[in-house]
Image (cartoon, rainbow, N blue to C red):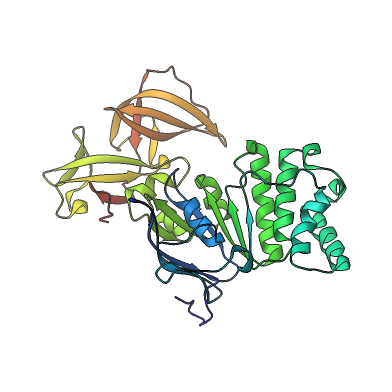
Length: 364
């Protein structure tokens, strides 16, 4: 599995599965990315993304399939071949930082270089270089207990990139940070990724991180890759209802409709032509939040819904309401207010952007 230019993929995951007893944590995953890519593995808890990352790091062995870095096989589950974690030219940033408490910041960064047998002069120069790159030179002589969580994360990243690995692996590195710092660190990680030229793999359950940081996204669910591609491709052309509702802020609306005459009908309201459902009698229509507007819009289908909550966003309001027990998200111009339980109108100002079978696969 090589890129079109004939060069080997920086990371190739070929039909990899991982089982723990009778439980399959990763199920026949097959993806690859070119050198310099920023691959994000995203999905809900228990979807297999961290297990996949641990196999890339050499901390777990595939049950089947193989993994290759720059064309060199580092794991082969079928043949039982596993390259040592330290011989993969890869660095791993843990969620918990995992700094050595008895070492200073400089000591933490220098230690992997000592293990790699760098000379003393080269170690000192590289420590200063990465301290500067991460903006933490002033912390050089402090100990982990003397610095903040955000600073500890920067030290953990500096320690990882110190030996100049070709592959950088991130296991939910921002999950312990507050919301403001997470946003700042996202930008920092992208800057560091560009500065190092490494190929990065980043695990998260946060789809906002996935969509803002990635060059490639693999959406995992129950151990399988639901869809793999560029962020906008997945957002604009989801192949399954899982991808359609997992990605995007706010999540998209899925409305179950049935054929009635020449239309697809919801609660007696015709929303689309029956031809959109092809041979299906019942389907799910995908509407983005901006496809539904709060209030009556002349000439557009309108339903009544029970108001639940409102969230101001950039001069508009994202409104959540319930119709026949279904949660719907719509937009309102300006700042909208209502009491919980009030009946409000939602108008379908645009047609559905996609149609899915009841089983979840995309029809059109």
